[in-house]
Length: 82
Image 1 (spheres, one colour):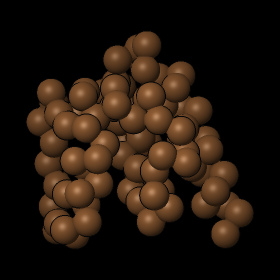
Image 2 (cartoon, one colour; image 1 turned 60 degrees about the horizontal axis):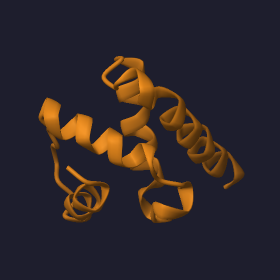
Image 3 (cartoon, helix red, strand yellow; image 1 turned 90 degrees about the vertical axis):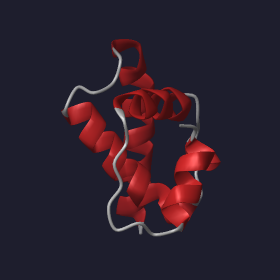
Image 4 (cartoon, one colour; image 1 turned 180 degrees about the horizontal axis):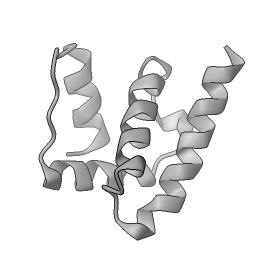
């Protein structure tokens, strides 16, 4: 699942969202290539929550940890500025 597909799904405001293992891996791979400016501000908290959950559960490939952690820190910093 690409980030754009994930954001489109979030726009529908689902009550419950479940990602398959493969979709989760693909999403994390795609997110790891993004900058904070690539993510609409209204979805920063959603992406932050996703990254926290995936990183804490070690559900990301090792080579993706550093870029995802950098993006997570950037997202957290934007939340603390508000």
